[in-house]
Image (tube, rainbow over all chains, first blue to last red; front, side):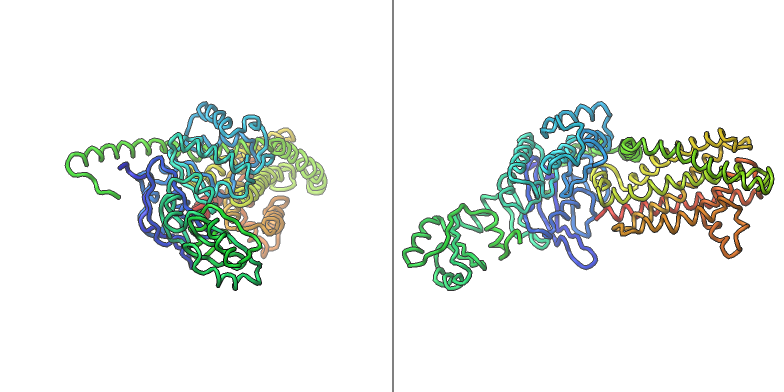
Length: 308
Length: 291
């Protein structure tokens, strides 16, 4: 087995009066695409910063590319590309200049940085924006520029903190395409997200994190199999009738989850459950049969929705 | 983590490990050494975007101040007190070194306030730098280097105007440019440290401008010798880096009589402020970026 590029053992980050990361352990293999899935405040970003060697851990073991971040911060960071949650492109510089100054931070010669900047502008589909002001870019373009910037040093591993939060669906898909291409080229990806579809699209393996702890670990399909069912039937009866209907639905499918305004029935076949429901005289106002997702896994594990 | 294999397989993986470590250490070595200059390079690029303002103030303010005070006001002072009005020299010669030092202070008050706030908060580029091989202390070094460069240019231009106005009788006047630089940086480093402590700007920086920098300029022996102030106000001068800088500048600009020990105190005081401000800024930055 190749040596993991990230290995955490009982990783803890404690602030004055709260524990952001509470004993997290996982390993990431080279070339793997690994996700941290969880709601806001779960400790994903904090974990990410510790791995990115910009936040000192309180306790536990952490090795990134075989090195201890406490001692080899600049060395580890020289091998990483970081896409933070909040854009920190320099708005006082032009698009291409942002890549040029950033490349220099890794001690790369000017000529090489310039060449690489042009390649990356192409990769990020921003060639015609090279001389534009950063503020004139759309949200999706800024994100792509940030990713291009993170690639300027040919990193062995890319850390992405909620890469598509706040982007419209089209921009998200363009971004996913780019990330998928990097993954194909063998770049290790570590990403946090609270979007299940993103995790399903991009992650080979992931951990579900809540309140600083790991709730489950596996591939997206594996987690869905273990903690959910193949399909989910969502029905609404109107908030007044919800509780009464819920009582009559108990025993349907593999499992039933009653939410304040809708009921979820987990089953291998949502259609069959719906037929059975209708046969027993229940008339939902709306019904939807969908493939089970990581959101269901999360709900099952924590009893809460991922995005509140 | 898996345990190492027994026998020489462990030895091989050890040597691969050592090689990989050496490669990574080499990759970061340049940044460990020159990182501060890379940050300065970035800052110069940013300054280029407002280069016109920099040059305009650098040329405009000596023109305006030297003319208004050194010529206009001076005619009044010299008219009343004679050609060797203060310290045995003309008012213009007395005033010019002080204006030079103030010009360094004014660069400091621009560059060590809002751009710092910007980098930590409004457009958090410092966090971006910190995510690369750059270390927090290098960010501060790079800022100091770049501001020092701008300050030096500004002061040099000022000095040229002083020569044009015939305001430098002394032979070692050019040293005053470097005294001004030291003055500006000494005050600026402290100002930067203060700015880093601000989580948000709710008017503090404007207050500093109004209630620290302006009074300092007025009561640091700039326009009149400090000993003309009532004794209970003279302490403002003693703590003010501008007063120390101005007095030292005058020694070089026109040979103002001053005991040598006092000149040494000026230098030590300014250097001490610079060191304290610089080190403090670096520490605060480590704390703010390592979250």
